[in-house]
Image (tube, rainbow, N blue to C red; front, side, top):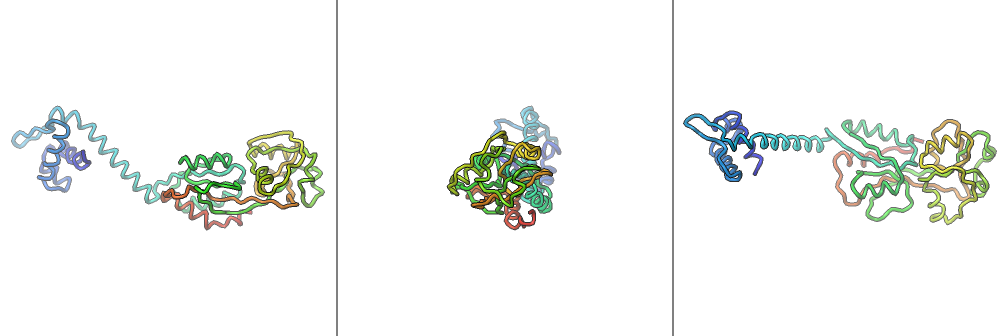
Length: 293
């Protein structure tokens, strides 16, 4: 069954006249008649009864009419959706952002994306970097922005910006008197563990440094909770320099050695982009990420 056969059939249902139906469909009447005959053969019975100058639907014709009307409507809807998708009139986007990336670094980019693709229906997914990478591979995400020290070759990565690690603490902390903090300075400190932080792996695997002997008093997956506890004086935490958002958080650069991470745009190698995803990727590569500092 082909869609032009369905369209011709419904035109005859509406006009009850083969000649007018052919004119409405902008096709020669023999072609319309032949198409409906082929449709009747496929459905196994006569769809119209022609009596002199009058045309009537048969019982079979009345039975299949609503189904074929729905089929044509769904086909037209799919075509319109596809055209909107191709021309960015409708632009669903699924963007994963590693939860340890500060929102202030993303706001300017997201505003530019909105201006570039006004029809973007953006869904943000915020969680740990490894989870985002898995979901990207499974097709649950279109693109991800992560800061992971190593990624498999099946992903294409484009570095966006780098940021150093700092030690965050609240008012009155002993680190206030220091210009910078070393790992040794952290020994004995009350520490707030950021569960999704990639710093421990980076410190151990890339820099080959032992963990400081801290007193872990709280652990949480939520960055807002950790920062609230920092402000409350419950302990300190290692954070990327652009992550702290709450008023009252002070930071000192982590040194000896100074450590940093690279935040990258990640896509699946070889996977074709939709127009909206292609626009997002291109914009990310040209965005002035330094301006968000």
